[in-house]
Amino acid sequence: LLNTFLKLLNKVASMSTNHHQEVALKVTLNYLSSLDVDDLDEMVMDMAYLSVNAEVNSTSDINEQDNLLSEAENAASSINNCGKEAQINFLVNNGYRAMLYAS
Image (cartoon, rainbow, N blue to C red; front, side, top):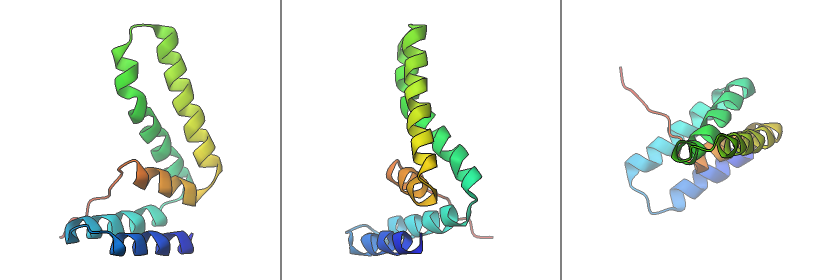
């Protein structure tokens, strides 16, 4: 996991992103790395559902809705079964970003 984390940080440093995007990704990776696998399971499932939400809402065919949701659940389960590294990669690659608030 640490190796993947370092690779992602290096990728961030080598990309031509602005400072805020780089910081946001670092905060996200630190946050996700600190979470328990069970919490990541839920987040992956939520992200999978979110990815098919528009398609589900665009059809009135209940069977099609069920198929879309089932596919999302299966994809999320596969990712969750691959462990924490796969979960973090999935979340980051699908746009999840943690927010940093100064107090």
